[in-house]
Image 1 (cartoon, one colour):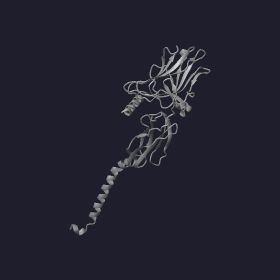
Image 2 (cartoon, one colour):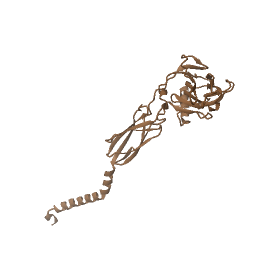
Image 3 (cartoon, helix red, strand yellow):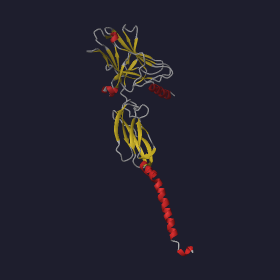
Length: 330
C-alpha cells in the first residue's frame, strides 16, 4: 500500500510541474540548475547531510554564523537532492535564514516534490548584505510520510569576489550528526535510458502514397529529463533516419514516408538521450495492400477493357457461326 501511495504521489508531482524540480511558491525566486549543467554533479559521491525519513519529523541542520559585513552581492549555493512527497498530509523542506542568532527565522525557499539527481540551488542573499546570518535546513513530515528525505551535498556562500562560507561535510565521518541530520553518502543515480518510442501513422494505406509517421517516447520521455534523439528504420529498402534531434522530452518527431511497393512493413524506432543511453525498440506494422498508380491505371482503362472483352466475345461468336456448314441452313 505504501508503494502504491508513493507511485501515486510521484505521478501527482509530475503533473504539477513543467520543470525538472518542483519548488513551491513564496520563495525568493531561487535558480535551479540540473546536473546536466554541471558535469561535476554527474559523478558526485561525497559526504552529505541527510534529513532522515519517517513520520512527524521536524529535523534541523544549521550552519555556523556567516559574516556578510564586507560581502558585495552575497548569494547562497546549495548542491542538493530530495524526494519530499505529499499525499494526504504534507511534507516540506525549508531553507531558512536568521539575522538575530536564531531567535527568528525567515523562509527563503520552500521545497516539495523531487529532483532527478543532484541539483544546484542558488538564492540571492542581497537583502542581508552587511549582516551576520545563520542558514538552516528544516525537514518536516506528517503522519504516514512516504518521503525518502532531503540531502545536502555542499553549502556555499559567496560574494562577487570570494567565497565567504563553505561546507562539504568532508570533516565528518559517516554516521555523524549535523544537528538533527545524519552524515551519509548518496551518489548520483545512474543515468536511465529513454522510454521505448511509440510510433503512430497510417497502418493500412496505399503503396505509392506519402504518409506522416510520428515518433515520441511516451510519458516523461526520459526519466532523467534529458533531451532525446530518434532513429527510425522503415522496413523497406529506403535508408533509415539516423539519430534525428535532440528533441525535448515529450516533443515528437514527425516524418513523411512513402512505401513504393505493396506489402507489409515493420517500422522500428529507438530513442537515445544526450548521455548516449539507448531505449528499447518500438514497433508499428503497416500494410500497403494496393499500389496507388496501379489502382489509378486500372480505373482509367476499365471502360476500354470492358469494350475489348465485349469485342472478343463478339468475334468468337461470329467465328463459330461462320464455321457452320452451308447445307445446315437448307
